Length: 319
Image 1 (cartoon, one colour):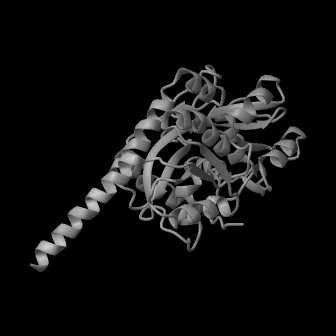
Image 2 (spheres, helix red, strand yellow):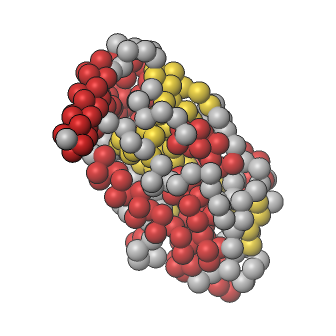
């Protein structure tokens, strides 16, 4: 008798969830972004909201909650009801923070339902225009000949650009002097003035400066060369195995019903396939992804493991 009641309750709950899933969405959806307005993460989130709203026939709104490397927004989503109405667009720091922070107010794996990765964006290793090294091989030789002399700007402790530099140092054995800044803009300003020697910077921010001859580009962080710089090598061509690409993806709270997960995933993947959006992403030097929830979940786990030794070796501490 007790077993019959138990299974009946389970069946009723399943029917209720199915009914809610069929009605979804019945009201506006909110996407939290753990970065300021105007940044790349914010741009990625806003790129998908309008076409999502059109497909789902409900408003999709972006709310910026910057702070603590994206942790404030992530914590808020982790604690939200798993009903599909509160989502998170996060970035590489989601997996980097798992090691960077001694404790987090959420579990970056267990407290979320991964929906899909939106896009991946590589960066450039650039130097001041008058740096003696003319290519990446010469740069490594110069850095080894002058340990702790060449400086590298860091726009944010624990950012994907910071960790790209730490990974570069680990894999080449060079000793570069870190110079931390409160943001990419002041670091770039000092690099252009010749007050620091190097920095990793997104293709979006660095392309114009390189083409104008104000900065020297040494390589791209993707595993292949980029169309924007066909003659510029991938760093991995000189440093075998090197790759460091920022990613941006959509998460929901843990426990999201499968039907809602699938509906959100299908909608976003269809949005990413639209020619206008793909063109917009290309202007950001981004490559659309749109993987499955299962694939994205596996990626998040692997990315935490991938960055953990780099974070630990860097000795980086959160601001």
